[in-house]
Image (tube, rainbow, N blue to C red; front, side, top):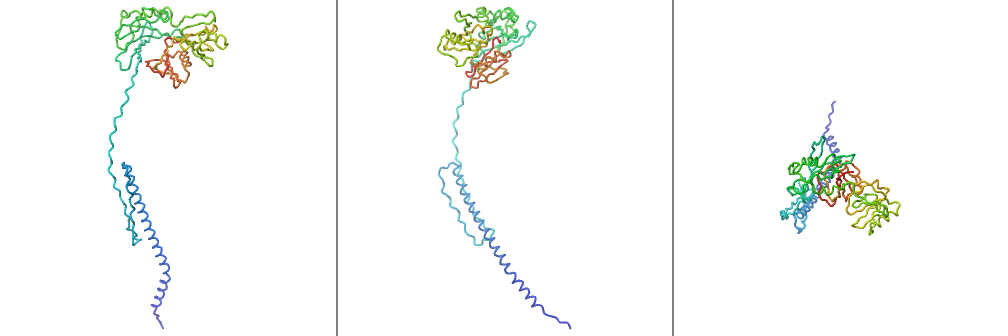
Length: 399
């Protein structure tokens, strides 16, 4: 016999038991959702407050940057109302936007006066020209002196050449013009100098007709007038100064010349006479020569003497033992800065710079920069200009 049972009540009872067992889980989920909603609402309120504070700071910065010296009243922070529904995602705190003040125009600045241009004064320009003469090449160098760079023309000019004789560069003065309107006068070199390079008065004048003057003028031999100053000075060649022997001390004395370098320690001795200077040297075995400065009454005792340079205020006296070592240099010194091809530079003392150029056959002149104690040697010279910060020397006859 088939028996059927009614299971409806049993199913309902099981379902009720399952729902009752799930109640704690649902309660926990609801509590977690409520905490999440509260945290989200609090974070939004904090963000809104921070934005409001930043906006107020930006407004103050704009006011200060635009030059308003009166500080504005601090803006009140916006009141953030607590929303009734903390779980609502649509809540946004208000953001205050400051109104910038108009930019004040600055008054135009007055024009700053500019410094006038510096004008170079008392400088020389050189023109060079190579010519064939008597079967060889001669370099003719023509110098022109300008009072300043704004002058349209020079005020005097001269022309010369250089020849090597037994390893010595000899300067040969050919002609000079005392003014742009004046004819050349020449030759300027002494007869002995012309003989050293294979010239005489007539051939030197012929060579001078080839000089390159900046004004472009050319002259025939008949246009060149005799150089009167050359005739008066020809009896004493520049490279052979007159010497005398002091009978009392036995010193070889040369007036108008200075022995470069080799100073003994603690020199000079001041406020002495030339005779006292020589007597002191004679009594000191270390001293072989002296240079006496007549202007400052200063005595420089020296351990040796070799190179002598022209100095109108100096008297050189040397013991006989070093007489054969004396060499005379025609370096001409001035407070000018020369320009040209610089081939060597080094930090040196001034006397050592003179010796370096005098002993180098390639050197035609030097600049000594006093502040840096820097020596610069040149093997060609194009011009020179006054500069009190530079001491320079240019060779007339290089030894």
